[in-house]
Length: 423
Image (cartoon, rainbow, N blue to C red; front, side, top):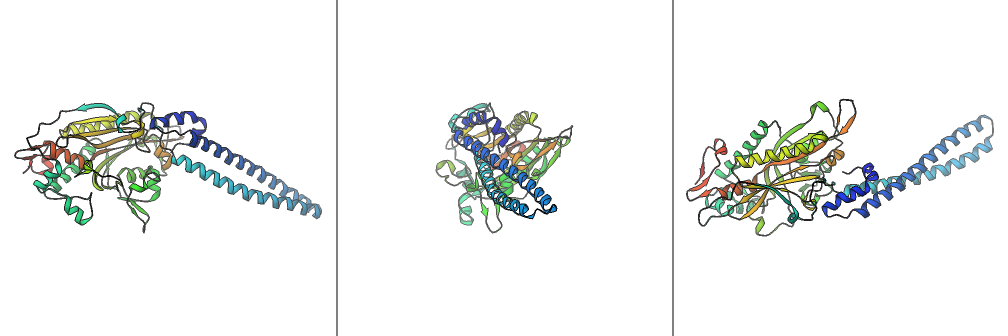
């Protein structure tokens, strides 16, 4: 959440930075400042009336002591008028400040200056490409046909049980899923991340803290009886562990990793590009989350990007890294890298990870701070990334490793699967 004090002092900068997202925020910023001024004017008048009321109360006391009851009664009528005015001002201040908060909450994070201007994925910048397009046998199959051929993922059974977007993993398909999760968690542990197993439902305060609410409530599964949301990513519960917390500087950086199932309604998604594992309502993911000092956060972003790329390299997957333009970034992000793997049978790139720096956008909402060496509290920065999301990784592994004899399992996964080929 952008801070009101920052908007007051840097209105033009906020408008300029938000324009990188393709957003014209001039009118919203103007309304914030105008409404804020009205609220401050009302609060100033409140304070003046309160001071006047206190002064009159003292005067009434003195008049009563000296027996001047008639003059005291006249003062009391003035006090009554002040009380009525205070009630009106209190209501006005509450309404105006609520409007300011509503407007600020509607603004996404301001992009970092290195983020390219743009409105859609077409404006993203390719940072690097690793590996080469795999050579496939003739009549290579897309992963949904391979899944049926080897009976490892049943999409139709998932439709019967729950609906489209809820596949059933079977046999070696289920083992491959479990192997990937274990591999990703073990790699995170070796990289110094603490493993977390968080709840997979969160309350509205948690959704607000990381920026999912009120921006993405339409994409989240909601349990109204309990007023809980199924998580779209482990980022939400893990980051909210530090809501309303003041950390010690010596505790930073905090590095956590967690595996969870994730749930997304993906409303409005349809077409050939969502077939098979390309877009699901329920999927598995390992998430990495860091809480760091502000001066270190952009180096940490690069380190997290390199870490995720290392996982893709160990799996032998051809991938590319994109620097997202302003219009394609998430609501809360200040800068995001996307990693995409090459799907050889579909002949297209599939996003499998986003790594983002949120700067103070989430930590202001969370009220997550740290106490520096001088004892002063400062705002921390938060970052997270997928390390990794499984569906498109599985899709790429199945398609890119298919041979006439079956689907080869990457060497790093064989100790986890117990087999080196799906045949």
